[in-house]
Amino acid sequence: MSTKTIHNYINGELVAPISNQYMDVINPATAEIYAQLADSNEQDVELAYQAAVNAFPSWSTCTTEKRSQILLKIADLILINLDKLALAESIDNGKPLQLAKTVDIPRAAANFHFFGTAILHFSSESHFMEEGAINYTLRLPLGVVGCISPWNLPLYLFTWKIAPALAAGNCVVAKPSEITPMTAFLLAEICIEAGLPKGVLNIVHGYGNKVGNAIVSHPKITAISFTGGTQTGAAIAKIAAPMFKKLSLELGGKNPTIIFADCDYEKMITTVMRSAFSNQGQICLCGSRIFY
Image 1 (cartoon, rainbow, N blue to C red):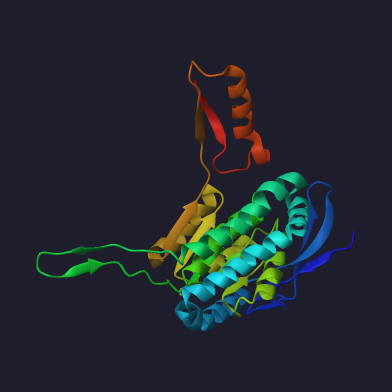
Image 2 (cartoon, rainbow, N blue to C red; image 1 turned 90 degrees about the horizontal axis):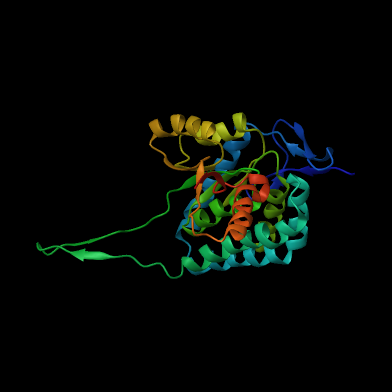
């Protein structure tokens, strides 16, 4: 199998890592090396941040209609490239091709579509005070935010973070899992085709202890969204909390499935097994305990 070189996406371009170092990406179904992935570091993260902060003034102040049009174009292109993206995800993490085609990739497109339309219909509330004042909430973009996603639903969860951040007018420095980077790389190509302005989204590939840590600890990246293991989430909170960054941590859990005595037993067995083992059990809401 010929190998693909996966570059970073910084300032609207696909670029090699500063170190010019790469790591192997392995197809778990065949144990074959199918790609060489950029082995980035804090210097690449800084380049991505500079691109994002330079893009922020124009992106945050452009009309919601313009942001919506671009996000909806990305959603359309994801669906147009559904077969290509599904195959990439199947090779990335060994997922059945049909599952990627019917769930993961369509949901990634839906993420961009949902938030791309939601910003056109946002409303806020205000309330009148007896003294004659009116209190209201003004929602403004935060600036440059960091998004770090896991391997189990690589494009679905990646876009679940990126789409709302972009819709709200933020610019993003994002890190996909180094285990499943191909769909994020293809998303970068889609963003270029969709006309997303340079620097609005930046994707930096590499290991968590280098790229992820650099994103989390960057003094001017104002918010972090992370999905992954509880231990890693605790380490992120330890770094980010003293810096008063906004945090969204979706971590591991022990979700119970509750079975009542009057249930349809055969249907219950099928449902419980699907709940526990869908996607090889690698879904944060899978039922891993049974209450009977």
